[in-house]
Amino acid sequence: MGGLSIWHWVIVLVVVMLIFGTKKISNMGSDLGKAVKGFKDGVKGDEEKAAEANPAQPTQQVADKSTIDVEARDKTRL
Image 1 (cartoon, one colour):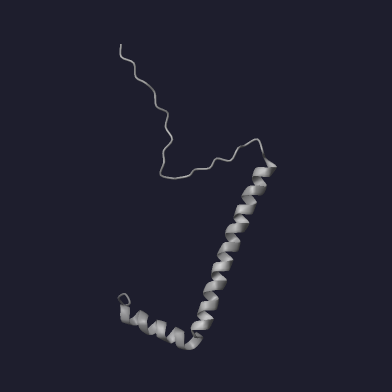
Image 2 (cartoon, rainbow, N blue to C red):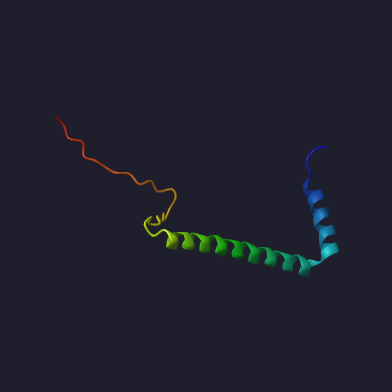
């Protein structure tokens, strides 16, 4: 009951290719890509509608999520 080796996955891939064919698998991949793109556009559209509905709150855009915004202060010596 161990994990599947590379040869098991190759056999499964060959069987899937024989059953569905490469064209059908390619079409399913492109349909999946279009669905993901449509979902992202839908979520983006909802965010824009929310921003239009409540203009008092400005939208904050972060260019790089690894950037940390800090305030630097001078330390004066006594």
